[in-house]
Amino acid sequence: MKKEESTAIAQKLQTIPNGTLVVKRCGAGETGTTLFGEQFRAVTTGKGYVEAYEPFPGIAVSFNLFLASEARFRHHASDSVLEIYYCHSGRVGWNMQSGIAVYLGIGDVTAHSMTCCADSAMMFPLGYSEGISISVDLKQLSSICPEVLKDTGAEADRLRERFCSGKPSAIPSCSDLEHIFAPLFSAPISVRSSLLKLKVLEILIYLSNMKPEQKELTQYFSRQTELIKEIHQQLTEHLDQRFTIAELSKQYLINTSTLKEIFKAVYGQPIATYMKEFRVRQAMKLLRETDATIADIAARVGYQTQGKFSSAFHAIAKMSPREYRKVQGIASSDSFSKTL
Image 1 (cartoon, one colour):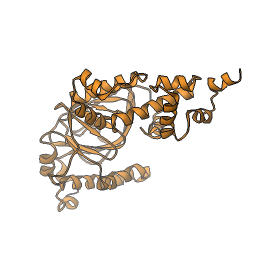
Image 2: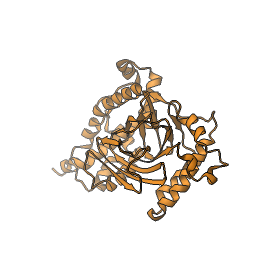
Image 3: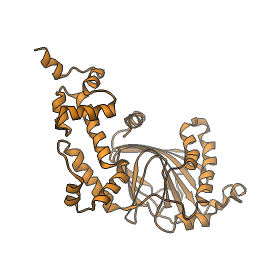
Image 4: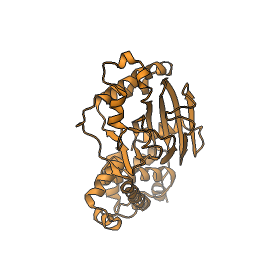
């Protein structure tokens, strides 16, 4: 959980009301067969901002910022439109039409037909995400820079057969994908439209030349990932209690190895690592916002002794709880009691 990333996104979205998803079209078509057509609808539990471009006819690209736990989308379904999504920060889970859930970490990509996500939900397990979405109308692809694409293998039929004829593909991060997408987040706004034309061609060439045996991310059933979210809710709402993997496995009727595997896929860390960091982050919040004693805070976030709590806190914050509170400029009841 990178707090600085979520803070930066919160600052960018501070003028957007909760429950609102703002879509700004920067030359993107108002209608058509790509993602941002007349049928496009979206709702979110938090807030979001989408900036859409149309670098070529039949291709829409959007820069997406979300500060939310979930966003739901509904749009036209088509097996001839290829959807590509790149996760730049945070994590993204996508419950597709087929009951398949795809989870992406930083640098991961999913590619699928617009039918797969016509009525779908995107989950943001860390509460935020930034990414890029690309919609490609394969029927129009042959008319887009044909001379550039002619000898690259980026053919509409090949892309349709590889990515639009079945379940979604989930491609793990690699240097090639980073080379394609990373410059789009650092380039000046003034050159964004021109750069998009180059990057769209690059990703189409990359996907067209992927080997069938190339390793992909594991996909899960949506019902499995929803179960993991219930487990996560129980763990994070009862920090003063400790639950073993065996206890959770028995309670939720899920195999222990499956529980650990899917939890890591959804939240990006092993369950023990994630919960240790989550407890410390909550302790930081309590240290900033209350005058509770360190011993009391330790108990609230699930540590039986102040010593174990201080050790865990220092491993993540690189300072003791008392030092952290002092840096925040908050007087604690620990120090107040010593003056009496």
